Length: 115
Length: 455
Image (cartoon, rainbow over all chains, first blue to last red; front, side, top):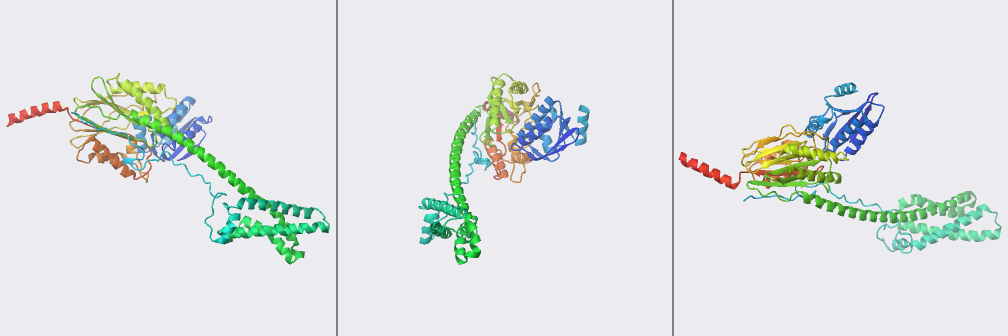
């Protein structure tokens, strides 16, 4: 899968595209961990506007990233989830343990107020 | 008497899901052809057979002839070197000229043989070595015509050193081919060992999935797990509780393969053990969640639907740890979802609550438990099977035994996937419930009595 990265002064925005399945999740997880490990920014936002599908292995990548962010004291949040992806996050309960925002403006506002 | 139908899990890729991801992947054939061991085809006549014997890659005299050429290359380089480096007296030039003539004749002989042996003559003539070979001999013949102007071409004889390169390259190819063959054999052996280990682990994993549904009057069940790879992360289970009720489990570990299978075994053992201590499904999942969070170094998790069925009255109580909501196909025709607030997938956060909900099955209802491998089976166009298709399949009548419904759904998923590789484990369980025979007879007796009274 393609993963876009947009860096600004405060935040790294990660943009996964297509299907996040068993095969794609290790690469995606590595991108997230690298972004979280970047000490010059305050947090990571995953913009899921182009994410079509998440398998349970993909969910695990989000979980590992959320835990890593918590340990590192950085913000980690999601935004722009398509309905099918949103359903997976809701069913598994993951939308209750990591912030899920409607759009990027809301995510950036949450990041700003969290710090 | 209760009839139990419980089918054993299938092999990946076999049966109703059609073409699953093949495992183990066939070892890619290592490219060892094109080297010295590759026969360029059958002889095309006596002349070709003769030439092939000398210069063919597998020619009978190719090796000694090659050594002979090597010796002549050395001799020729020596003579060229001597001639160029030293001002030789006239008596010394004569043997060198003879040697030069012999060398050129041998090289010419070799060139002609190679030309005859080559399948594509033009390509040989204009190939790198074809040109080198020609340049190695051409100056001799050309210089013989007009020595004054073409003597400069003799410099080209130095190119004979390039003929050595062919020899070195061929030796390298032979060596590399042998190395590749050895590595390939080692890979095949390693893979065979690995496959045997995986096969043993797979057999062990499938063996811990229940082979039969517990014998209970009025209950009938069928289940199937089709792993996407050798080992699966999905599992189903039923647990005979002390009070006569039956625990029903449908679960899905994140990911697939060996890591998921290990976590599956841990989760399944924890769940089975703790189910015996809890009469409430939610309390049981909370207990299991705590245990899994304490032994989860890889941040794996498992979604679990856990229900307890009272076979006596059809009452279900259930709790959901992040799993797909099961369906109840009513005997009357409708489809209902076993919903209500669920908990988080297990193994993520300790201390999470798992609310318990209740549902009353009616006579002839079908309970359908599944993992997302069913609804997220993809076809070649990357389209998912989806909830709608599953619900539509549940609505198809007439009602048969759970086994028949299970087969029908599996066939529907397989036909939808149409040979696309299976991306996730597919697990499905179907249960039907009706009152035990004794109670049914008692009701019949009661209604019969009522009928008589009305009559």
